[in-house]
Amino acid sequence: MATSGVASFDPTFDDILQDAAAMVGGGPVLADELISARRGLDYMLTAIQNQNVLLHKIETTTVPVTTSEGTVTFGPSISDVLSASTRTSTTDILMDRDGYERWAEIPTKSQTGRPTRYWWDRRRTSNILNLWPLPDQSYTIVLTIQKNTEDTLRAFDNIDVPRRFLPAVTYGLAYWIGLRRGTRVDQNRLVLLKAEYEAQLKEAMREDRERGPFLVRIGRR
Image (tube, helix red, strand yellow):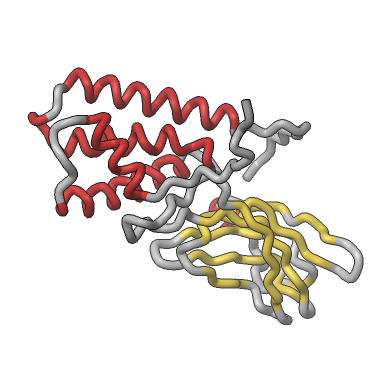
């Protein structure tokens, strides 16, 4: 028996919504539920990333800084800076990451030199990368960043998650719809959907684990 030779399964939001609605029962999806389901999906993806699940939103980028330019502002689409390095002509030199407390303890924030430490200041509508010491010349800063998932705006949009997370997303959306429908849905079914969502998410996170060797470093941050 021949297989299809195709591995491009990538359902749209509408496809997943229809499957989720069929799981929960209680009638067809109405217009107001469509809007609520899009919002619920964005809530769910945000909650997944809050569990330190990176999804596929890791990128490497570079930003130039000039003399005494100690801050770089980013938009809200960038959630975190996982690592930062100062690029010299031949080498990327890794910088240490500070938490707010350690950053606040620096007594000479106007000191200049090659940046060796950074603090990622997360705000509501922007995020700020703070460097120390202030650059004593122009440098290229190499960043490994985590981005937020993209919003789902239209029914024919694909969902911004890797394929391995699609089962969890479908069960999670079904649970969201069931909560919104209230008494129209059997409460035992809601319990089942919630349990299946959590199980599918756990399996996806387990499959997403780091497979290479890694170093655990305990220190003050």
